[in-house]
Length: 107
Image (cartoon, rainbow, N blue to C red; front, side, top):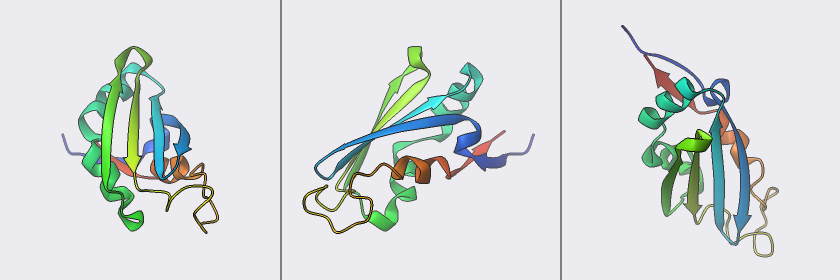
């Protein structure tokens, strides 16, 4: 069986929050089978690479299997946060949409 890719938003939705320069993005699978796929392919390193243009210093993935979700804590993503950044999206709300656009490999 060969692998194919599709955008993350086909398997999950997301919510985000922020505090200072730290963004917190939760990815919630639509179905249990989608969660199981994402457990394998949606790694902290892949998320860090996807946000590479913002130079995050670290990404930690927390699994919440009973919710079919992951919580990614991404440090140094928001240029200091709402009060310090000149970014148009200093709250980081649109960053969940950027993550959902990421292509994921499935078998």
